[in-house]
Structures are given as C-alpha cells and as structure tokens.
Length: 273
Image 1 (cartoon, one colour):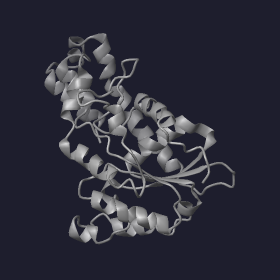
Image 2: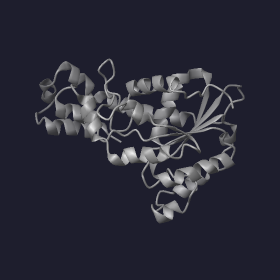
Image 3: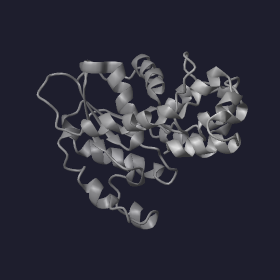
Image 4: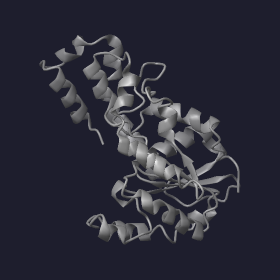
C-alpha cells in the first residue's frame, strides 16, 4: 500500500528541490492530480466501510450481499455501495491479502509458511451463517498467481455452506502508481497509454486463469473495464483527478468510475435469489 511519505518521497527524488519548490515545475493540472494530501483519506476509505459492515444481516427483506476479502474487497464494497445504495444490504468478512486461500490449509504448508495465522483466521469463516443468508457472495483479493489454483475449491466450499450466487473479482493492479508515472511524464498527456504499458503480464495471466473458472462463479474483470484496450487505461477522471492513489487501490473518483460500470455491466445485485 502506498503511503503519503512514499509518494511524496518519490516525487521529491525525481524533482530534487528543497521544500515545496518542486511543485512549481508542474502545471496546475498536474499539481492537482499528484497532490499527496488526497492519499491519507483515500487509504482510510479503502477499509472504513469494509470493517464497519462486518455485522450480522438484518431482517429487512431486501437483497443481501456478503463481500469477503482484503483491501480489494474494501474497494469493491465502496463501489457497490455507491452503485446500489439502500437497494441492497451489504455485509463483509474482512481478510488479509496473505490469507487469500480460504479453505485449503495445505496451501500454507506447501507454498506459504503460516506465520500470520491464516489457517486459524480462515477457519472462522467456515461456520459464518451469513454465507447461506446472502443472495450474493462476492470474493475479492489482490490475487497472487500461487493462489489462483485454489479458488475453485474455495468456491466449492462456499457453495457447500449455502452460497447461492458467487462473484469473483479479478486483480486490478496497473503495475505502478499512476501518480508516479504522471510525475515522470511531466503531464497528464498520454498517461493512460503509459500506465497500460506498466501492467505486468502476471496480472493479466492471473485474471485469464480466474476467468477460466467461470463455470463455477461469475468472474468480473474490472481491469479490462478500466483498461478497455491493449494500449490505454482510464486513470484520470473527467475532473482530471486520479482514479488510483497507488498501483491497485481506488480514490473516491475511482470508486465512482467503477460504480458506474457495476451498475451497467450486468451485476444485478438488487434482486433476491
């Protein structure tokens, strides 16, 4: 996760001037885009609602959506909250990126030492009654290539516990921070093309492999929507604000952009199963 200090540090390293003098090398448009003061609030917003909604479902007769995952799930909670508002009831199971293989303990002995207690943490998910209560379960992580082979078995376990309809949200990493790319470029011109070239093949391969399991779940490739061609990514809002505050997390404008996509791309969460 990018920190305020990291972004400011990278900017100052590129423009080695004292104090705030480096800012005056840039246009007003670029200074607004790379303004590091947006980052702390954006970081807090990634997790705030995700943590707040880790509560039981109510008795209200509206469609119920359970979101499971790390900060990428946090982003998606914000997206669907903006897209659907009070027409659905969202609840969450916040997790850690290191613990994205939910129900296969052997993964943590074969591929990743379980120093962080993922096995015990994830065991608490298994009996969660909200899995069966939800009309839709959404699973979102910043997926690693090592974890992808276990996604189908995790989805199978969720179905055994009563999950009715399951969405898996793909990796949306654009490789490196568009803020830093904008600094190096010296302007917002062609930034979407520059960012597209920085996306790692591993991310594209991970999403392709996740898409191949779509007979078991509904796959949502947000990255393909954000980067609709092989040469361009949407990383600048109509107001010339950043959609990402680092390489993988949305700003408020990014949430707004993705919410419009979610509402128009067939994610019909506002119906009961």
